[in-house]
Image (cartoon, rainbow, N blue to C red; front, top):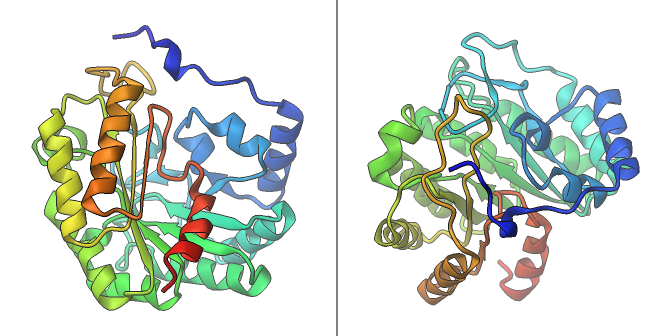
Length: 289
């Protein structure tokens, strides 16, 4: 399945603006998931002056076959300058909402939780009006580490379930579906004022019924926000696309999710975890905590 349908075409970005964002990122020695994971929305987001920061290096200790981020079993220790540099980039880019994510760092006892917390606090100090979203890995089920992140009080905690349980061994072999749900459940229990969020990829061979069951499972742990987008094969060595899902199907899933009680469902072929993430500020006004 190599020919993309028309609905997956994206507008060419204005590279002058993209270049400005890249200059700031390079100047401060920062990585973005936009670049490392070959996101199709990089032009639109960089043009708008937004980026999802990727902390603790550009390489991951897991080798999930859907992801374009490089694998490194022994990455470098977290950079002590990174929290300040990230906060400075947030200030320079004048971001209203910042997303901070990370590669999996299974080599660290806390999975990188302390670095997440340092970054959140640095942004809070440097740009107090900016709302903060963290998109975290599963921390190998280390719930004390999760507590470290929650104590820093980001507005949104995002953890992606990525796919349906039947496909985990193939798509996310080092992940665990129940562990991901438990992470979201514990976040709601430990920090009820923080909005929880998760995301799914479609087009890997899942059925409509399986997608709807995952959505129901997420609502059962009181997840607030859901993103649903089309999986795109980054290279021939990655998992192939099994199906291109129509915009109409995404609309059906959005309506189903809204009927389940999600505060927001963002579902379209080009939706990604952090796409239009700043819209959460509107949700915080409509559903304050």
